Amino acid sequence: MTGVWIAVLATAAGCYALKLAGLTVPQRVLASPRVRRFAELVPVALLMALSAVQTATSGHAFALDPARLAGLGAAVVALLLRAPFLLVIVAAAGTAAALRAAGIS
Amino acid sequence: MSAPVRVPAAARQPRPVRDGVGLGLAVGVSGVAFGAAAVSAGLSVWQASALSLLAFTGASQFALAGVIAAGGSLLAGTAGAIMLGSRNTLYGLRLADVLRPRWPGRLLLALGVIDETTAVSLAQPDPDAARTGFTATFCCLYLTWNLATLAGAIGAGRIGSPQSFGLDVVGPAAFLALIWPRLRTGRTERLVAAAGAAIALGATPLLPVGVPVILAATAALAGALASPATQPGAVPPISQSAPPSSQNAPPSSLNAPPSSQSAPPSSRSAP
Image 1: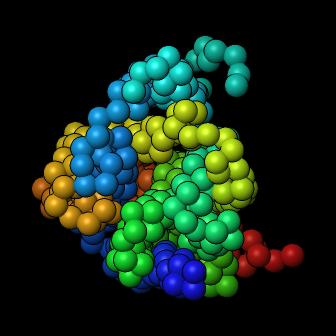
Image 2 (image 1 turned 30 degrees about the vertical axis):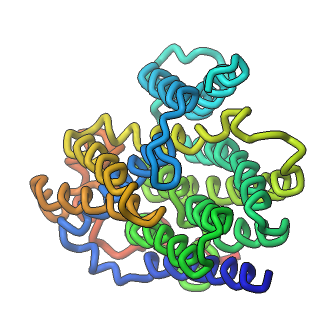
């Protein structure tokens, strides 16, 4: 149990330090247009990667859960219809929950 | 939440508080899933809550719980979770430019540098709205995420599987919705997003859990090197959501001292 506490606190300290470091890097690091462009594109790449990994994998394996895929599909449809953020989330979770309640996956 | 929007343009206007509170509630609720997963993995309720209070970055928290659940080494679990948090450094790099945090407050503000606060802040058209959006998102998400973590941890085993509520889709859908405006604006953004997803998926069978997502940053690097460099000084502060007309905005907004953007900092903190 002590080991788990050490892991928990070390993770918290490390994650906090990384956040603070980003805010503290000198502004001139962002002066270059390429660095600025990189910093702009990083969230796009990482959030899309997170979305893909959380949708289609489980551990090291690909795991295509029909209800989860349908939920993400519903989110895409809602986004194409310009639905507000909350509606996008509700559509995604609601679709997955309804399919599972109906016995799919 | 409101009547159907008749004027689409009106719906696109910046509403940092509504964006932040909406996102904070929607994503924060998925803290239930983390609390439940953490306790199922063998963490205590207090350990789950400590992670949400102090680490406050969902992907890292899920990663650590996942490794503990799988019986992996605590060292590897900790290293992976911290590595996964390194993207927040890159977010902070971007946010520092927009939020321009002062020193004592920066220590608290740093805790809130995560995917969601970054997305809301950078979706605003000007620095003041960005600060408001950051604060609204941070406060709402921090409260909701921690209360939900506690509820999930205590209720684990009683509420059944979070999956039956579709909570496992909340994260992927939220991340997609967050970058959607940027995917609409540029071909480079769409290519970078596609490449990032492909890299992460391709690396998933090969690399430790959590690392493939970090590797996706190489797509952003390639995009930055390949796309035409914008003229220095002509980049609007928050380019992805700014209307085309903002290209004519005075270039000074980027490189000028912070005080030129709004009220002098001292007036903000003065009682």
